[in-house]
Image 1 (cartoon, rainbow, N blue to C red):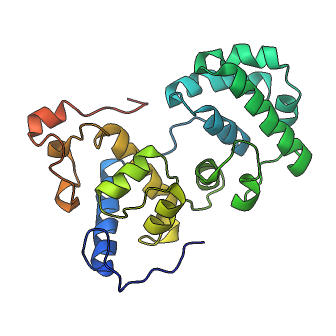
Image 2 (tube, rainbow, N blue to C red):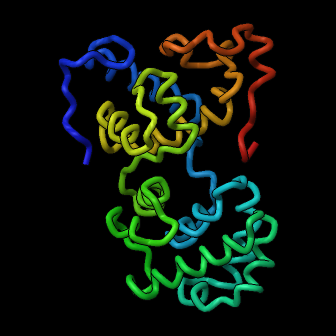
Length: 244
């Protein structure tokens, strides 16, 4: 639940709460126009596939996960099969992802919990999802928003970084970021907001050297100027993202 916001308190950017809400929503509208294809960059066809893929994506890239999961799910098509998997066999499938032994154990353990507690089905409730081994709020919100259509904010490193640069919040704790930013938007927009900020963080607003001179929301960003300002030089910093 998003906590009640005190609209009389100063916002992180020093503007009124109403001004911050208007600016934040303007930023999201522009990013929506900039990234009309924004979506989860992990391939999946079922809630289980997205849940497992998200867990596997830790400390690796979405590209590698997407190249690996088709083989994994062809061999183990449901939670029952995953739960009964031979660890050595799964390790070979997951080897390209790195940390393959730990990821094999985590995947089997997650599947066993699904079978034991939820009859092998991924539960569509955050309170249930976060009880599963290896599943926190970030992973739960990815699954809820993208597999079940239940709005959720996914606070990964990109989302947190951009939320602070844009002056939406000064919080560092992911749960506090989730609540603070969520209070600025309609709940129905939370999932797509997450995609917009993540896509922008991967492609333009980089951690070390943001491409401010090529940023479509620079005029509404209080941190504009911290990165490369020259449009030509900034354009060279742009990245296509995992699917580019």
